[in-house]
Length: 152
Image (cartoon, rainbow, N blue to C red):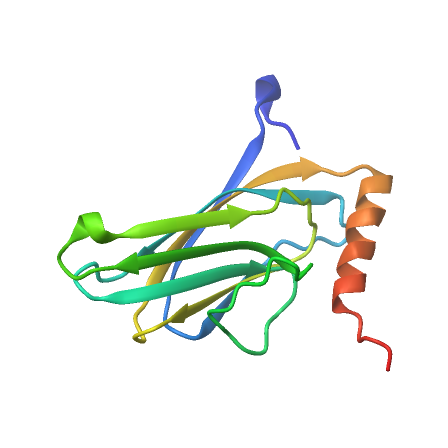
């Protein structure tokens, strides 16, 4: 979807999550003609003066369990971020953020896991994309495939 003078529309989301929780970002529409692509995903611990490690992941489907294991072969994973803090030594923080350029048109889910039960902030920027009927169908079918129950 374009704004005036050809600029792209960016939607931002932010939140603070306790350890072992999941947030839902509601994006679905009735006709599925609006798609999104992740352009930025950043995390920051709530308390920088602690020793802790945080793993946050963005998913296409709701998760039943949170884990620190990041599996890039999982087709429902859209992005992952990891940060480690060393209490009082701000230069000791390390951060890695990786995300997929895939376009989606359904809700997304953010999970967090901490090694020491700490809370972590997230900031996400999504580029809004107008989908034609073919792109809409492809995005919707991908979402249906990801939520379908596997055959025995």
